[in-house]
Structure formats: C-alpha cells, structure tokens
Image (cartoon, rainbow, N blue to C red; front, side, top):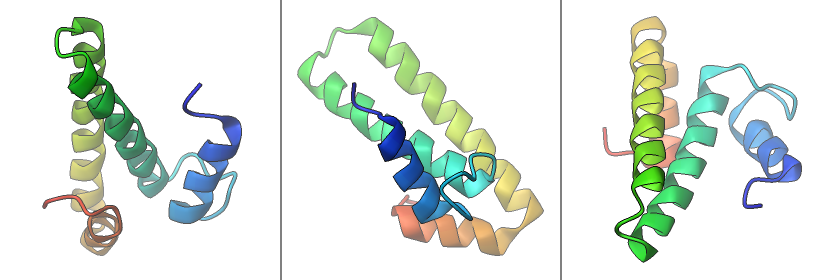
Length: 89
C-alpha cells in the first residue's frame, strides 16, 4: 500500500501542527497533494484507467475546495501552503 500510517503521520507532522493533527486545512491539502501525485503517476502508466481518472478528478476538486476555503478564511496560511507544496497559484 502506498499510503501507510507512518507516511500519513509524517505528512501531518510536516504540514500540520503535530503528527496527530489531521483536521487542519494545511494538513488535508498536503495529504490530497500526495495522493494526487501518486494517482498522476498511475495515470501516466495506464492511460485508459477510468477508475483512477475519476478518483484523481475527485481529489483535485476536494483540494481546490479546501484551498478556496483557506483563501477565504486566512490568505496568509493559503499563500504559505501554496509555497510549501509548490502549487501553481
């Protein structure tokens, strides 16, 4: 499995407030980004995999909604997470 408990805790520790902080917007965006990167690699190998493509589109939408929320609530946190994750905006 590509996403183990240890990997999740590592992502939450790096981008959230602690390793157990699963609820902050930054931690969720970082987890979505990790999963999107993994599914993108799978799509490069299997171009006709419609199930993976659907999951990928759903995750991109969730991340976009979370980023929109973060932008509305606190623009500085939004800019910081965009810069940390090297997202285009």
